[in-house]
Amino acid sequence: MSDLKQFEYLKIKLEAIVSATNNFSEDNCIGKGGFGNVYRGELGWDSKRRAMVALKRLIRHKFPQGKREFWSEILTLSRYKHENIVSLLGFCDDSEENILVYEYATNSSLNVHLERNDLNWVQRLKICIGAARGLAYLHDPAGGYQRVLHRDIKSSNILLDGNWNAIIADLGLSRFGPANQEITFILSNVCGTIGYCDPLYAELGILTKESDVYSFGVVLFEVLCGRLCFVTRDNPQPFTLWVRKSYKQNKLDEIIYSSIKEEIASSSLEGFAAIAYKCLKRDREKRPLMKEIVLILETALRHQSLNVPSPPPAQFPPANSHSSHASAPPGLLRLDSSTELDHHSNRTSIDFAQLVSKERSSRAQPGYGGLNPEAIRLVHPDRATDCETMLRKIREPLPDIINVILALDSSAVIVDQVDALIKICPTKDEMELLKIPRIMQKLRVFAFTTTFSSRVNNLRETLKTIKDATKEVTLTFTHK
Image 1 (cartoon, rainbow, N blue to C red):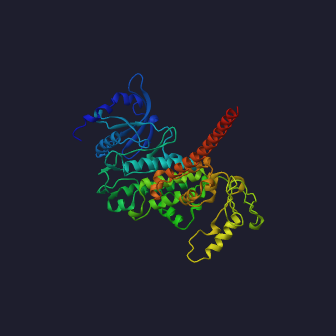
Image 2: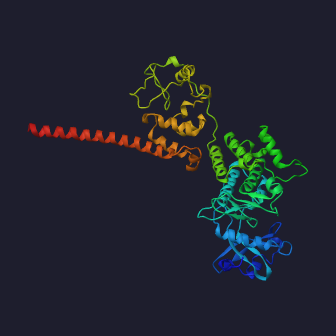
Image 3: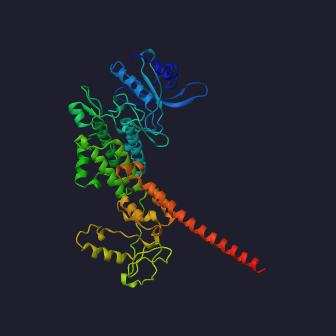
């Protein structure tokens, strides 16, 4: 780089760094890598600004190319700002030194906790989501910035701050590409870490953003299995071969780490494992985009948070035991013997037994394309008034459920349940991905319509009362 004046504001004097690390003492060393060592120290910029930092000291005499990696990382981290990308606080190039100063990750890195296996499933999911967001940002940054390929995604390069937020680190090997374009590099010097490196990149030297996706898939399976990907005496089989084989043979139970196996919701596991497997596809075109991975992981977390013990089986009376005026459990829908809605009741209801019976008879008709009634999962009547619980337990595709609800008459949904629908509605990105636009807007319009109608009716009643009172007062004065 010819013009480095733009980075002058980031320069830190060597004396301050030597003091912070106690002259690069082994007691302050918290990590050793291929390009140098990482130290911990308290650095003071002035009398009021002091903070714990991490300092990476590159070994220049051992790796002459380290100078390029040094300035590459400064350039990248000074331009690309994201909550899940490590923050560069400064650098030092005095006396032939190449030292980078970062924010300090209080909770070390992901690989440390995978070896300790001290993370629960929700923590693991949140860490994966944060790392995926950071990598998605590098692959598709805003503001017309060039895309960045990391080239060395691995669990030891995913740091964890004091709040357990994931932070992508070590961008010294990264490469830039044109914004909004597919980018491919042909590299003679393949870099990365064995076990995480994309096989096509390792074999042919062809680097694409899908190379990062492959490496991230390895990390996802490490998180699920509770072990690192390296081959050891206890684990002689190549890691990716082992996990892919287990997934294809539906033997995930055999590879999930034992301490988290009982807490993982099945729907959360399905989404997580499926996207991790897609990341490891040999065909790069079949690997997902990082922004798609973010959506799937967020959905897996949402499924995990909604996972509650199943209620006891519902006991429904026979269909012929209901008369046209029979009451139904609160929140259920009921049809009388003539299948007409009971408009006199405050809450419309249906006899599900009759509904299933009618559905079966309808299926016998030519051209029927409805749902299989055996697939219907009913909700216990004690919890049927909880719209969120109903959606969670029916386990039909969420967009289909929402479309069905929106097709109902407004009397079928209580106004305060609309908020519950909105709360578990797909995100904007998910709706675009599922090609179901404006669902959220429709729900809000639906809530406004029902609320507005209720207020109009109340206003009409009030006006009628005022009108009647006025009429009565007028008649009183007329008689006088």
